[in-house]
Length: 561
Image (cartoon, rainbow, N blue to C red):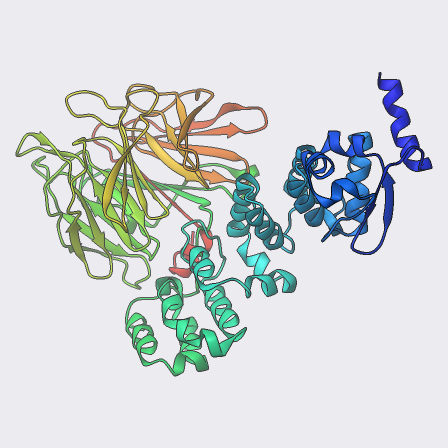
């Protein structure tokens, strides 16, 4: 049979036994065979058999299809092969969708994945949205967010983005995963987008400026923004900018989602006898070792405190114990942008708690769950601290499940809470919509676990180690809300862990176990973990915080290694 089918393409080339002529928009005529076209495409089958005028005609004009695309589709019908070129891949993709040619669609999708770049990604994204290809749209959207700086530097792509409606522009400029090396470039894009149609868009400036992260912009950068004519004519925006100038500012304008590459292991506290800070600079693979840092200001003021850094440059020390060993709800704050760089007391937690989880979102710090030692009960309370107003606010609707030692992270205005413990270890997963202010339950974890390290890479949350599964690593897909598992780690962890991504593929886990420092690397190609190093000796009562920062961010705060 295979030998017989080889003759069909020869018949096409020699125009033998043809019973239909397809005509492109440009007038190209291709003589073919109805039975071959109908067997390849359900649309051609319907066209030739249903009571349409095409079923009675020998010449059919294929509308909105140029010659190259028509030739590619006809050739595919006879040979099951397709030759894709960038100059017509989107037209071929659209035609394949319309004519129900699944193999060509899949081939176009693979071509796009392999050949996407800053110039074509916007066009690919628009086309995938047009044909409702959710997988490729998500792929292009992710690429767009991650490479926004290069995309807006492409004249062709920028022209297409400037055609976007306001809702679409708002969608990406406020997106948590937007990667930009300089926040002022967001402002420059806003002005460019408005200038594309000033008459109809100038009134939208205030709405767009709400999503500019002013705390990332230097004083010099804010002054440049104030001098923009569109801004000067808006008193409300000018007042907000002047108010922001009164805050301590970074020396240089920062970006969003800059990859952390300096890891600090902070042990002890300033009221103790033994305390030290070590750091690892991960930028050089040839010199990965822990070094002693003289930035002792990072040492927190109390024992057993939880440390966290916000996007706007504040380090907080939350909770811990006093000199008598009693749990406290005290909070201290260190403004990394200030010249003095001193810990100062700030507003304490609304509710006393220990064994709580902490996560950050922009200038906010969220404290989730915990255990109330005075009331001897587990907490379902969530409160957040605004580093601008210095006020703690409790979320009105309590978390459905009271718990301590859980893991939490925020992505796209959603607070995700995993596992933990109350009377039992938990597999429960709950999500709070910060904007709409309600909780919902998600599918539980595959195992009950607590004290897991947590991080997120794009649409995947990683849960690492934990008290009940030291070496296991779980993956939670935020797009499809399903679970997967990675190979087991070598040593694992259940406390004092920070997880960061170094490079495009590898996941690094840094552990500070009361002074013992270790680092494991997941090799994505080999699909296995490697114990890279382990150093130090554990010290009873020693602190165990790890903070991950970016080298440029440190320089903008006036901190030099």
